[in-house]
Amino acid sequence: MSDTKKLIYSVRTISGCTFLSRILGLARDIVCASIFGTGIVWDAFTVAFKIPNLFRRLFGEGALSAAFIPVFTEHIEKHGKTEAWKFVNIVATLLIIILGGIVLIGEGSFFAIPKLFNIHEKWQLIFKLLVIMFPYVFFICLVAFMGAILNTVRHFFIPAFAPMILNICWIFGAFLSFYTGNTIDKMIFTVAIAIFFSGMIQMCIHLPFLKQNGFRYRPSLQFSHPSLKLIFTRMAPIVFGLAIVQFNVLLDSIIAVGFASTHEGQNSISFAGINLHFPMKAGAASVLYYSDRLIQFPLGVFGVAMATAVFPFFSTHAAREDWENFSLTFNKALKFILFIGVPASIGIIILREPIVDLIYKRNQFDTESALRTSRVILFYAIGIWAYCGLHVLIRAFYSLKDTVTPVKIGALCVCLNLVLNVSLIWVLQEGGLALSTAISAIIQIIILTIILQKKLLIKIQKEVFVSLVKTIIASFAMAFAGFLTLKLLPVSDDNNTLYFKGIRLFIPMFASGAMFAGTSILIKSEDFKNLVKLILKKS
Image (cartoon, rainbow, N blue to C red; front, side):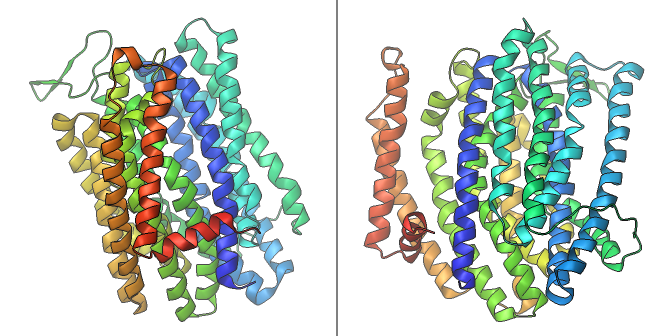
């Protein structure tokens, strides 16, 4: 099987599992939106969950995977699998020690801070939830490491399947919460406990497949191994560079909690003798969470899937110094990301209101919550294509063992995001936080693309630009069809049933999809033809 066919097969495997996981994730968000709505309790939960989840992205699937896969690939290529598995044992042993220490320090801090300092109730709840959920870091980072090992040996199914376990446990915890608490501030702890157990289960399901591929864990304390030093030297800058979008999202949530009014009537804060009114209302972090979850759907199914599948190919080409195939793979990945990301951005912008109405709007998630969420989605969706592309682009740098460049650009974009955050919230409320993230991602991908071309003396091929023009034409035709169809299905109090909500989403979605497909065929889009083959082709 050629590299191109292997890449397509890998993307299809990861995309399929990720799609199912996103469906389960959507189900969990529907359940939680109905039970918890948008308010201080869900605000606190979203921030508390994002902290261990950020550790997973930074030190698990982000930094460690990006630093480990190229070195592990090189060991297999040059020294054989036996030596490579010995090296994995060394990394695993050190990782267990480090993660154990991080969890112990974190648990002590989260338990002590509320006792030592007089902090607001919304922050008190965040720390209480962190005490339960932070040990999830230990398990999920090991899961990400195991997934990196399996991905390197071209086993993509189990690492892509594992997130489903989190969603299943999360949904189970949400339903179980009805029996464990009589108020939402008590019920939320059941969900937190379910997330903790999901980490253990995900770790356990990886073990048989690692064994099947030849791995046997034997504790090894040979921490003087030169390749080990190389990995952890690279990890430090990667921590910041690869997960820049996730870091910005966490920063958004913290600002959303800190700059939001409370239900107790606290609407302003004194700073330097000046009384400032909060620019946002309670629930801002919840609105950001629900909006981000919808944006993560195309990002996970296509962007992360492509990046995960293409990374071992980048690493192999770089290890062999095969720059012609490296350039070819990069251009194919970039073309695919733009073909998926641009219409995803435009489509979600057009259909954001019926999507939110159908998925979230019920019980505790009221009309105001739906309007706020739709508004934030508008700004987040502007950058979908950039979020997808960043995953691929940064992995291209890491396969070249260049961890410094993404860090420098990442630092610049974090600073830009922070400046935009504290500026735009006074005008656009929580929408300003989403727009800041989108702008930062777009600027980052433009700069990194320019640098990569100069570094490798490669060019973005003409066919990428031709593909982009055709994709934009098809996307605007799609947007016109969706907008027009929505106008024919106005919302009123008399037609606000679940049945009508479904019609108001799926008819415009079908019309938009048909217009996109028809236009793509009319303008002879090669990418559309390849996408159809990718979907229909049997493995």
